[in-house]
Image (tube, rainbow, N blue to C red):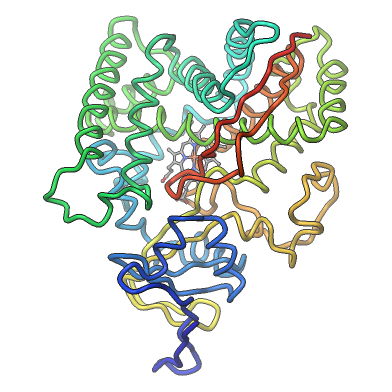
Length: 445
Ligand code: HEM
């Protein structure tokens, strides 16, 4: 480990873990992203990393995280790595824009995420899940993560876009895979100059073309059927009012389809896996869905009362946060927790080590959903699965409701007996996607 005193008075440079020549800390990161991040986080709340092509500051203290996301959010813009990952697919979306343009796009999306809208989506989430799960046969062995992806794409498309996407899910999933691949630190072409086309680039071009064509189809269909209250209509309304361009409509529909299914499917996979390992918790959830739901099937009205299920969702997002972390770039020199970061510094605030930090969590690695029943005085940013501040996840309320209702509906209908083929490792990319095969055997109730 190395560290230096800084020129700026009263500040020091953060420690840098030892790395290997040329690849710096990138090799450890790509081999075992969560293991490496945990180890580095133990060196301090702010650690400087040398990753090929860039210096990155790992920030794992709730105070500095809150400073970046909330208090000093105007000093921290989105990272060049994020813009680069989404280049050619979401250049006109909320995910990559900044300033007045980003504010305009968030405003245009707002009607699709009001409390009423979220309530409206609930019944459709339950309906889509019921239809999907009904197709699993008793004794069938399913690829759990893959099924959760298909289910999440269907839930998102039906509830938020009012489209039946059955048979076309892979158009969305392939584009998401291409994005994850592009940002994957383990990808062999990662170190090549941009002008050398790699198989990843070619796959990206192909999947993006297909997804763009699908989204164009959705938009013209919406024009033919007339605008409703789905997210595509909400964006077209804003376009008709002269607030956003057609490219902005397109790229934000793409952003919804991609951001809106990937993280929920990772979270659902872990939730089912964790429940399988904790039959007492699972039994309590089954009881809850029977008790709360008079009709034996959860509905929109009942989601608020599914308290234990909501605690399982919170605990799953704590132990297995679906995203690698939140990235930002400092627009000017800034002092964070006594350390001086130069203008242009790139920061990564990873949820994993913070969500498992024993300074803030009792028995941090244990799955204890009941911990969410107790009030706590831990710092707010000891838990931030959906990020925070003005640029937080726009889909957070939808996602929380979706995860709660999908779990309750599944638990009410089937029991899933899970097996994981090998140690639980993760893709070093945007999402912490599980790498081993995760199968489940279905028993119908
Ligand atoms: C478990 C589920 C989810 C998790 C853990 C999650 C997490 C996140 C995180 C960490 C960010 C980064 C925010 C930042 O840079 O500060 C983000 C951004 C975003 N998420 Fe989610 N998300 C989830 C589900 C969803 C859903 C269901 C949607 C859409 C319906 C969605 C849409 C978005 C969008 C559009 C952004 C970009 C926001 C912006 O930059 O203004 N997410 N999400």
